[in-house]
Length: 199
Image (cartoon, rainbow, N blue to C red; front, side, top):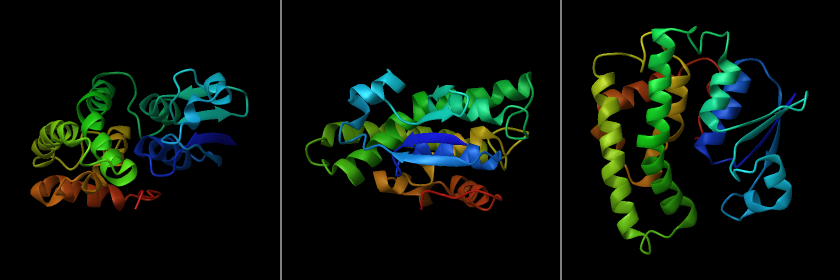
């Protein structure tokens, strides 16, 4: 049994739950209100000094943080993560891309619009998110126009990582119909056995 500390609408927390379920790990869920400050409490910071969700705690006492590290750890030895070599490196390229070029725009725009509801107050930030998010989705579209998955061995945790916030990007103001290959990929990921989307 793995305990997952997370916030239900979070794409990053979705990744942790999804890979645990896909690899046969039963989970216990503990809801944490990140927007309400619950990741800054002494009890939470004792578990994860970074003050973020998700956190996965296994029965042997190991604690795992950072959603893409969690994906990689629990996918080890499964078809979701290729063995060491070029194919694995390609997966990691997309994992880093998701965290630095995708999530900071797509997820942040979604949080501002759908959860914080501070659209007017953060208009300038949202415009930066729109520009960065459209660039990120465009890069994915370019790849997916020629390939079914983000990497050759696909589907892999690269697809899970990027699916997490892409499939709900409309909540951040992104019209996914503008990227037809990306939309087709979202449908393919949704159709994979065991995938339970955020919505």
